[in-house]
Length: 464
Image (cartoon, rainbow, N blue to C red; front, side, top):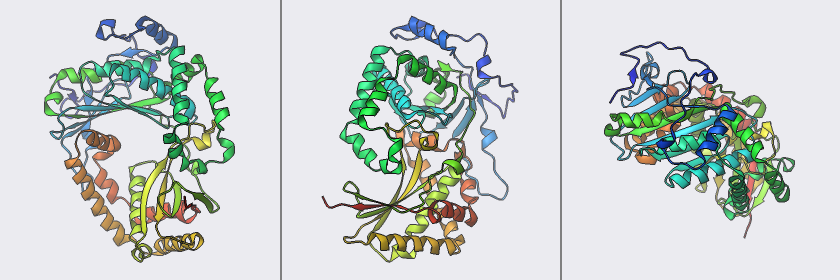
């Protein structure tokens, strides 16, 4: 194998040039793979000013991230490698491990434009899913909230084909018509109705289309509209690659060439994160909703956002502290789970409501529960926790989370392992430092913002 350049042993300085100034892009030859409408696809590429280029071998920059901070506990992970591609913003995280039989890759396109439209995003996802599954039904494509990702095993020729489909926008009127039919069928399916029954109440009714209007808006989207939107999607996106590779594939140069093939360079890593203070959901009044589709007898939901791994750990820690508080110890019918809200397809184009948010879900089991009394008792419990000294509990949970991380890293296999590595990416090197950096002040600030200063949404289970 011609190994990727290791910056720690062979330092090379290169200047990153804007991706839209790359000269002499090489369009892949037709004999590399068999796809229909290849010539028309080339014309589309020219018209949309999106070019493909087989990238140079990446440079390893692991030492940039895997640094021990003096005085802090550090987890050394010698089998995790980070690479950057010269003259691009593309980064590759590789886990070289003997825990997988088949090497796998996760490729994600993440849109940084907060004005994305859920309906257009769904149309693009549906078109890509149909096209990709035609060439390889084993590829797992996901798409939600302005992000498209695929997972696949490392098989020769598969990755260049998928990347070509992702970036070429090579779909026609018939493809669009079929995609709309699929979306309407999904929108009217029991599966979608069940999934959205638990989130529709988050949005005011005036920001959701009714069924008739939704289908009318969907059918009015033209092919040119969608291609223009897709082009802007790519322009305001960046890509991430994560791979889990066995020793054989890691030392096989052919697999490295697979990563480098057919990737669009018309991508900007300009992370325009939404203004959390402006868009964070804050429920000012207690909302009570009678439902017959929840598991618990009473359920309390509190919405929140996280921007980085530290905030994610804080959110989990708060949930664990609440569940081990005196209130929960004194009863035997409590349980809890964290989750997230997806955007409904019929959500109107609205910047402030577009972004996905997480939620604390506290479930209470017990017939004839008084929801008002229970809600007040729970909020009193939150205030008691907030007023307490939490240093000892925080330190105990830090140890638990470190042990959990190491266990998962040492045991997860295949798709579960790939998802695990993809979740942490660069943070995987300093996860211990991230956990150790959490203070009581951090925890209480999060509690105050999302629990103390926010009223819950109360679900009460209806008798069927």
